[in-house]
Length: 638
Image (cartoon, rainbow, N blue to C red; front, top):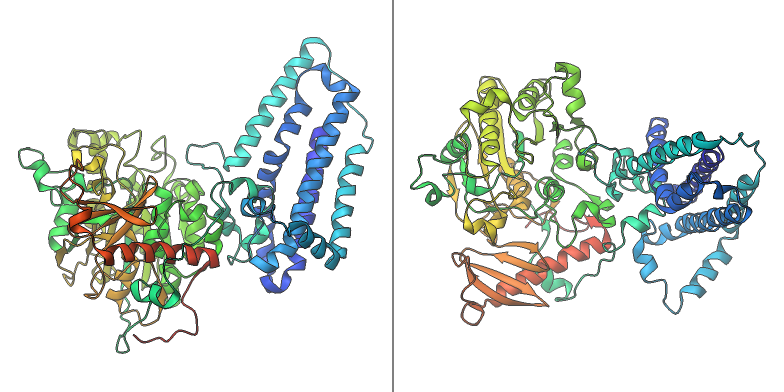
């Protein structure tokens, strides 16, 4: 009981720190609606739980050890000083955050720890303290509350005797450890992932208010190793924007023509599964690929024959596809800087009157997808729980969520209720380890040369079923369908998929039932090009921010840059340019998969190197500013 009481005391103090932080910065956050408060409080408790587990996990374990040593005075004294010192540090950091936030618009992270040894750090801290004596007083009062509350006399429970003492205390300790793990991960299911800073967006109506939900030491511990962002200065501002810009300006005569948009983000759908994209792999095989339906859409739509993922993890895909923001060294959504203001595709289309919905058959909160979806502008996030409420509990795959064929059918049902025009996007889940398919599909699927290929064929069949079920509906013919994989599968079939660019080569295509999009492109493209291309097709008539390019813009440069194992790789129409230590060090022909001949002497292109440098500099300059929007002062016409 004592440990529980003292843990509750920590929650109270951390929540009071949050109140101080919010009041002190109320002008920045703007007004609050009463309806916002429950979510902010709940989110704050979630992040306080993680902070307590991080900072006081050792204290909790030592307090619950099933040994009589706990009753010794020196042991109790050690626990008290741990609690008091760590608690005082947490209070000091949280109160300091209230001041610091005004200058940086971000919470205190590991970046500040790394630079705290500057010669003027002590002088600055003393100056800030002198200017904010009222906050210093509040901090001291909260520390005193922790100490007083810890020392407060509480009637102890009678000690258990003999074996029951060890048995009961062992059970309590084990349950507490499990609870701490669940608290840090956001659950115990395999879909749960350690909570990251952008998860705070789930509980706030704006990216600025998401900072209220956050808590230290969570922010510090979760950003160790990935919080420092320093933009290389290869070019001055004018030269930088001439080489590569993230600001897209519409032509003066452009007219917006709204159409429905459906984006399929497909789990692990490597290009090698497609006979249309890789015909040579199936030239001598009776099995003509594992994606016959997608292949048929590519033949009757617009095929992106060299579509590349911008990363190798699912968490990197959604910002790339929806927001045209790639991931470089770190996944974008795990960076503290991802809380900066942005206007992804769902937000832009909502401003044009679109209704928006995101679908994912896994449980709510899985992989943090719904948190990012909400921050991106999706009004609805429809998940496993929504499916089971409507159709029962028999369609769970036992691992990740609802089978793709069932959930895609459900998606069709829900789209029927969306007001047109609409933007709907789904992240499919079944083509993933442990590579299982529904029993009723097993006999009709090809065996495959890798474990994932039957699953790829299953997803392809599920997409065919979705089209068959919905092609006669009113909304169908006025819809643009975009298909792109999140990343290449870990199960490789072709030798070239084991090296670049094959290890980034995924299925990508655009399809319109009315036949308005036809043809194919052999030029390099990537996930970040999806958003600008869709906006171009719709005739979007406002400026917007994007790292990608409109694939139908003849003036755009056909270069795709990715980060891979410590180097940057630029895929052009003929070559792979490998950039490291500030320069292009290696160049290989696209077909030279064994990297037998470095062409850097004969094929070096200064413009490509400049493009790579500008791309990197733009990425980190915007991350430093935490700004992913077009400034209001820029002109609107090209």
